[in-house]
Length: 114
Length: 112
Image (cartoon, rainbow over all chains, first blue to last red):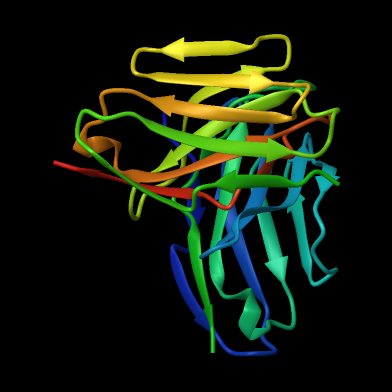
C-alpha cells in the first residue's frame, strides 16, 4: 500500500506570496489532518478533514485554509505569507471515522519564507 | 483547549539503560494518548498508544503508563539501543476525529 504523499517536498517563497500544499492519503483513509512542525514547538494542529468536511480546526489565523476532494486528497493554502510561516508542514491520514486512531504521516513539505 | 507538556526536552542514556519520558495534559476529557517516534529527517511514526480505560500497555521493550487522576502519562524504554535515538512526541486527543495536541518532543540519544 502506498504511503501518504505530499507535494512539493521543498519550496521557497517570499513574504506576501501564497502557497498551496497537496496531500494524497493512504487508499481508503478518509480523514486527513495537517500539522505545522517548527523547532521547539513540536507539532501544532491546523485542521482535519473527513469526507470533504472540515471536522476540526486548530488555533491558526484565517490565512491558513484547506479543503478535501471527493477522492480524499487534500490541499492546504497559506495566503499572505509571513516569515514565521517557515516550517515543515505535515499531512497525516487515518482510517478511523469517529474514533481517534493512528495517524500515518507524510514526509512533509518544507516551506521557507524569505 | 488541551495543553500537553513534555519533559525532558533532551535525554542521553548509555546503551542498555532505561529511558523515561513524561507528559502531562490538562483536559480531563482526553481519552487517547499515542507516542510517536521521529528519526532525523523522517516522518513521525506511532510506536505505542493507550486509551483512558487502560493503566498500562507494553510492547516488547516499550511501555506506556497512564495516571488519569494526575493527568500524566509516561513512555518507558528498557534496554535502550542506538537505533532508539530519535525525537519522541507524546500526544493527547479527546474529541471526535483526529485532532491531536502534541508535546514539544524529547530528543533521545543512546550512547553506544
